Figure (spheres, rainbow, N blue to C red):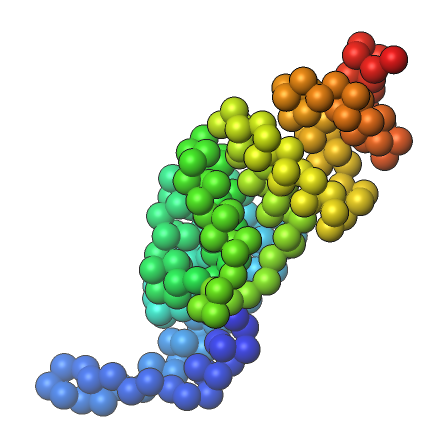
Length: 218
């Protein structure tokens, strides 16, 4: 659920029944939750993941029907290295609002950190293949790169090579994609093509690629 959706919800308060059928207007809780969420985003952007997590958790306690609150919580947990909890939070977000590419991309990143590479590949693939029900936007170069790394870790070097190429086609200065495509091509015994990738990565400032150039490229 994106920010404009949150604003629309705030303008349309939901009335719920309390004890003995009394009508309760939950607008105040939702406003407070929205405030906590915005504070959490600010903390996360400034690098204070612990404060961000506390703010997102308070937002959820006040109003637990906004999937973006769980997305924020997942990102904060992941920044703190608490990836099992991060996966639980992003799973809740996806259950509340399926088909959001940012959620799927985040889930892929978390699964990668948990070394669940097959699951990471599945989520990155969902994020990269939007449908009529698959809404939102992502940095497609980074998503292709992330899936490529997941393929590399699974030993699927041809698929990794393809994904790194997709990343490069969208961002020719993506130095890590050049470097890792070189590694994938090296594993595929495409030595001349690998050298060209490593040389490009060196040109873009990647010191690690220089070791490959020095040792393998003539």
